[in-house]
Length: 332
Image (cartoon, rainbow, N blue to C red; front, side):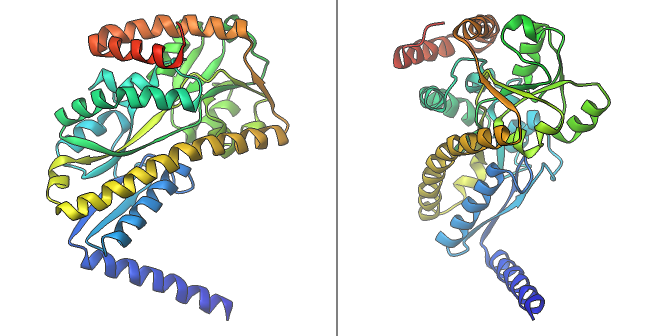
C-alpha cells in the first residue's frame, strides 16, 4: 500500500510539473555547475519553485544540474551573452579570462571571513553590473561558498610546509597559489580526485569544509588547515534580451524573490561551514587555524598574486581595493 501511495505521489508531482511547464508563457533552461545534493543547487531549486508559484506559472525555470547542458565554467559569460542560455550559475573566479574585474571576489586572502567577503562584493557590485551589461546579462542573486582551506596527510604550519604537495585545486587562483608556493597544483573535477589520490597522483586538495564532507576527505587525508584562501562567489545571471521580454510585474516579482534568495544563501554558507567543520572533527580529522605568523606569510603571497591581477583589472579595481581597506581596516 505504501509503495502504491508513493508512486501516486511521484506521478502527481510529475503531472503538476508537466502542466506548469506546458502552461508557462516563458520557460528558461538553467545551467547549474553542481549536483542535485549541493546546497547551491538546492538553493536554485527553491528559487525556481518560488518564481513559478509567485508568477502563477507565467515563468518556469527548468534546472539542469552538474553542467549537464555541456557548458564549462570559463565559457559561461559568452554563452549567456550569445543567448545560448537564458539563465546560468556563473562562478566569478572562472570567468577571469573574459572579464578580469569579476575575479575581485576570488583574489587570494583578500577577505578571509564571510563578513569581509560581503563587504568586498557590495563594493564591487557596481563594477560587476557595468561589466556584465557589456556581456548582455545581469545578476539576479549571488551565493557564496565557505572559505577554502587545504586537506593534507601531514600538518601544515607555514608556507615552507606547502612545498612539494601534490594538490587538487578548482580555479586559477589555486593554480597561481601553487606556482608561488612550490605546490604541484592540478585543476580537476571533484569526481577525479579520489582515484587520483589512490593512485598517488595527489596527496592534498584545496576546497571548502562542505566539499570535504561531501567527498569524505577523512578516508584519505588527516588534516584540514583553514587558510581561508577564498570564499568563491557564484552569480545567477540572466540574459538581458530574455529578461527584457518579461512583463514588468513579472520582473519585479523575480527581483523580490532574488533579493530574498541572496540573503538566504549568504547566511546559509556560514551555517554550512560550522556544521561541516564539526563533521570533519567527528570523523577524526584535525582542523587547524593558522597562526599569526603563518597568516602574515599567506598575506605576502596574496599581495604578490593580487598585484599581478590588478595590472589586468585597471584603475577601477585599485579604487575598490582602497575602499575595501578603509571599510575593513585591513592592511596588506
